[in-house]
Length: 450
Image (cartoon, rainbow, N blue to C red):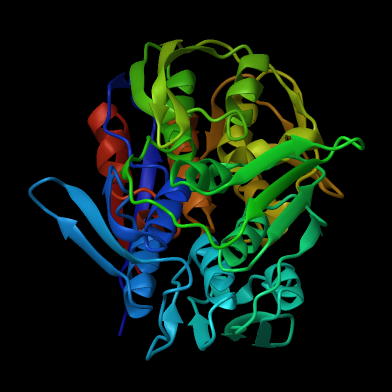
């Protein structure tokens, strides 16, 4: 018997025009559900990303006792929270699918509850390390029982007496920081997280918006300290989730690569700790502007307008910028592939433990399509083709949605079509991606493969 696989193929077609409706920010969507479940009362969330990753978070919270429902008439989500520390033991294993964010944040939440929670995920998630979260949670009194390498499936044995801790995060990770802060919600006293490099601060912003006492300050050594006073009474909110800059990155770069394009991306979250891609594209000479709007859910938003596609030049992205654009390196590498000159991206070690080994997957995909690439330690070097890449290759996605979308965009700036081996996982973060891109004028088709 042959299994059928959806195999998108991107081919060049110009120009791209329109103002697409983008999915809500995935990071903020996870946090709106989780923090809403920690209030007493009803939180209403508009613009929630209805991708597989976020839906796994919603289902897990239901299993833990929160009431979460979709209001089809309003196109909103309602979260009836149980208060800080009020979740109950799930009667089944929590399946996190492909979502590392859901897994790590919920591990933090249940660590300070007096029961056992079992977690699992798909093949990709079960390869990813969870020890970086488990270690601080065990300092707070919980225990993590896992297989070799602290990988899923695993169990979090929550503590009856959670302890506030001061913890210096060894590597930049918003997920580790957030797990500690969410565990600290149910601990007495002050929980402090110290990070040498600032990472995305969606958790801090949203906790503050929901009424938590949280302070952020710079220390004498240049590090950043986040202090949370535990056991607050969080207040339900109405949350409007901005468009996800990590999703907007794909039509943005596509429009920058295809001559004659005229694309406006509305209401995108432009938190400075997530906007490294915009800085890097600007340094490459990309012609776009950012029109500021207002704050949504404590987050700055803006319209991003592509002025015109023009010749991009190579860029050197320093390691210090990596935390602000860690999910955008696949699509930035695509831009570098058509640029003039040799681009270098430093500090990419974290890409080794994402949905796939993204560093290797990016390099392999580019090589398969005629682009010269080098990996030197934690650095990626891309030799730009000064125009359309040769293309014609097939890219192994390794179940990674961002690899799939990035190389479908590259196919729009290639001399020959580019195929990816599987596009099914794209729905984890960007449901309707192919339809959206084709609606702008792209030519991404589906074929069946054995």
